[in-house]
Length: 189
Image (tube, rainbow, N blue to C red; front, side, top):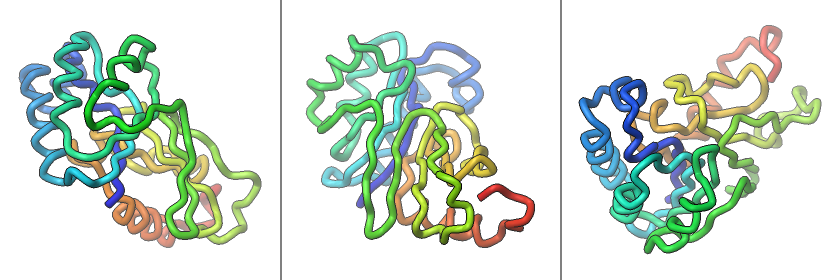
């Protein structure tokens, strides 16, 4: 199975983040994210983490990362410094680290980035199945379709998915349902 997520922000000690997620401390948030992740992701699953893995306490953050199930591909976010990336590379479950990448699932193309990215090229009149889908994070939004009015942009951050990674199948189902319910005259998609 293939999963996507972003913005775990392990060890981020700012109340506006862990408090907004409903936790009394960063440690409480860390433990709940690890629990929910491992309830969904199996050891052999592929997970694309689209940036901002951790902040502040790098050693404790690396411990959190090492406790996660799956083969993890990290797409760097704005908080993933070179020092952190060096540590990520030594984690038992991290298999790749990139700034952005594309993957294909069946005939569907996905552009994976930390930041929302417009991937359309005046192709609004083309069928959805032929368009490139941007999977992203960064915004800490609870609305997975926050930027859908700008293109086929779907947010995978933990905040939009009950603090759990989301499967590629669920993403495709969500996008198809959302897209099919749009009034195409009122939206630029």
